[in-house]
Image (cartoon, rainbow, N blue to C red):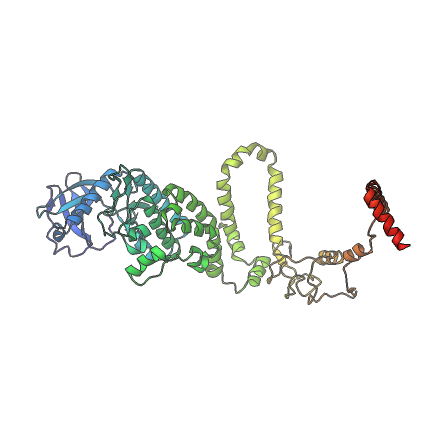
Length: 521
């Protein structure tokens, strides 16, 4: 169990200082809940620190509380996974209170971490949830549904530097049972029993007469992931009843709208929307299937979040133009970090890409060795092209970039007529790359699709009004060639001849024509 909860009323608790089962010396109270008390104790036989969970004395007479306590013992004993709290022993105190002896975990809950630090970075959250989904996948394969997944029950161990996860509190878990018709189901405790924590309950948990299965845990985990990455819940409610109503009938706030910096996280939003479907049949079937898609979505969306955070907090540029000029002059922090030998954001993305394509590169290693110099030159050429989008600069004698104010030949963007500066090679307003004077002149004479109004083009030539050069060429070209005219004439004559032959074969038609001719005379 976790050590996050402060020691409470250790002096007043009658069990502190006592020896349970002639083996466990109770040292202090770690925390209290609605069902029981958690103690820190020492196993005298193995000299190991353990956590003891004991049922409240006033709950001993409650048959449902006893069932829940025994259920937790059965579940934890059945599921053996390194990310699920271990059960070492169980017994009964002298006062007749059942207790469980479990792992003592030095750490704190994911809920405490979120309250202390806010939303977690995607990369750290990915390491945490990979362990959680793996543990749940095993539990579900052994017919166990947790039914109370929430950040409070996900413990982060501080025994080492990495976040090692332990899932605790299986008191509401259910084992698969067989109904009278011979079908396997996950039975609820009793009719009218609603179990779980309202912010994280699935719609079927909110209905007292519904049966839950592993897809209920998938719904709860989607809310845990949503809260961990955004710091918010997908539903806003003022009471437990209102929250349950949201689970049943409300539409969750899209993940991409939960925070401004998550606006571009479309892939993660899609995965969470599917996992938060009202109908279990519309969710993922297994935790493994959900984690596979969620992991890929988070990996793709995380660079977008990092980019936004970097621009909004780490770099105080007032607008896009000032950032572009900083890139052009070499004063941007990405170049400062590079000069100091520190990895830049671009270098980190390249490193991640190289890691993902390691297998592909290994298969082509011989080709790379034969053409190593050529590939190096190609990479450098790509980098120079990327920087050329921002810079109009020349190298000085020391190899540094010197900003060169270049006359583009026009004062306004040819596409949107917004004012431009010669220091950068793209329009801040429409974010298109600006053409050079030669490119602009060539495209303009070829009938390029430019908005020439308001460009402030500085030239002595006067543009002709009306159609463009290409349109004039089309209008002056002949409509039909001589061959086409001749072919048309032949077809007309052929059609006329066929019609004449068919008419002459019809005697009645011939007579009618003769009468018409006679009448005209």
